[in-house]
Image (cartoon, one colour):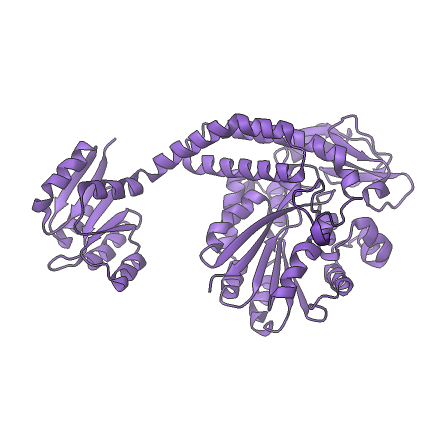
Length: 530
């Protein structure tokens, strides 16, 4: 199919050779000599792109561009100008020009500019498809031979990138292949974690030169060590640190909001691993406290056991746990720390309104629960599930929320400050597809990616059964309590009313288990561009 191009130039007759060249390359070009005629043609015909002369008698190029945008806000416009004046280009870009060329222009320059605008998606699709197919076997080999945490972080990052690029630029024909490869990666990753997790969490001390964590070592950086390893050094070297935790955020979801942040910040990307279970009471308390759940329960029993009571929350003492960690580290933020938990617009407004009074505060920590609420709400709300039927739609919905949120407004304000912003999460989520039966008494927990209770039983080697929780640095309330943590995209259901609950939880986002999506967490340091 030929692209249709409108060329607006008062000397259009002198450009016949250019028009002929474009026609030979498959473009249909219609020429007009002034802005008024261009608008009249645009009112009756659709074009794929517009070449617009900047210097014309009567209605000039910028004025014509302004009127074009009223008729068609999205048509690509390439301005051709005699001037390289900075103010002219600034005004043209402000009126949403897509590209510009400086006279004299050759036919090949015009062709290249049009192809950049009109064939970019096709070229990107071809390149993404070629890139993924050429790397397919290499990634399969990487999955089979991964032995270090950094190997898995690289595999996961690459699979997320290809999945998002294939969705955006390709005809989606390879998405099923990519999804199968992600599933194969999760299967191998689950086995890797089940075999090593208990040893890792008893060997999570400094492993590198000078007592620092070694990213190429054999043990992942888990949540309890994140603050000491990455956040405290920023506090030591910055005037102010804003630490934003978006509950239940996956790497692909973080990637969706990065383009919104990049105009305001330089981004430094890292990743760490959530502890098990990958659920808020465990993973987020580990971040704030710098401790494993067993250490919290033993060192601060009132802050842990109160959440076990009806109506209680094991995340009710995050501020206290953070302040205790600051004291242990002798941090400059001791006595100069603010904590906010944002669950709705009223909480968000509170943080937004108080930004002006936080100028001398060394550390500001904010927890945003929107994603976690949306993930749980999707399981219960038919309309929300229709809006986000799959992972791609869910991350698009997340981006839409962020783009219109008070949090984004806060971050744009922070981009004008002398501060460091850290955006991370406590754990991710998994879209559950397959059920497994678990046996337990009536007091067993209701979570579907992990269970804890007395005498749990699971006849499947894809479930990590923690018969003595303390060996996994988890507290237990009774002498016979244990934990079961599932992997891949499975969810755990009791035999009683099995089919009813199987239908209820199938195709729902859950967390608490072992998967790349839940365990490998994005950690992004943002430094203002100003």
